[in-house]
Length: 154
Image 1 (spheres, rainbow, N blue to C red):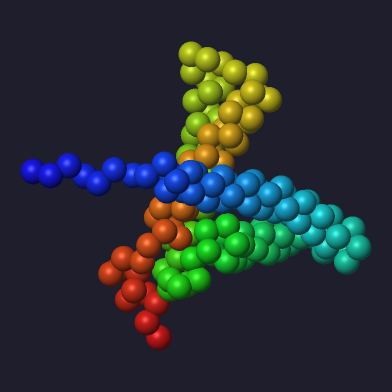
Image 2: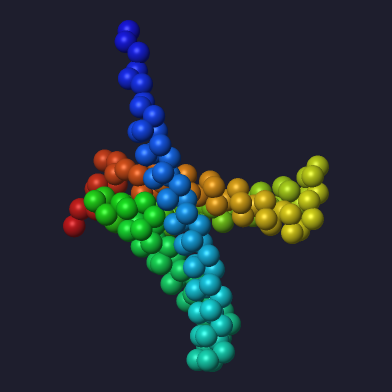
């Protein structure tokens, strides 16, 4: 058996540089998304007199589309892969993430730790940020499997 080829230090540095850039863009996207969500909800409700529910629901849809497009074209640069499969995986992953965030919050609040709400929310958001980044990077925008290719055919 032959040993796996060694990764060169310059290749490792290059990979870490790409990873750092992607994490930076992902973090910036999170901040922009927060601002768009709050600002658009406010504008629709206060300026256009939409109901609170319609304003927030519309903002969630806009931010979902903004996040998908930004991850696809800016953060992970996954242009060459089929967008339909990515959109489906992104949508499912986003919904599942909300459920796990809620469960983790409840666990931190009502388990042995009994964290104060501020610490529980902050912990959940940090863990969620890291988990979503690596999940999106690998399974949503990282490759196109045979199942996904069938979703992307016209």
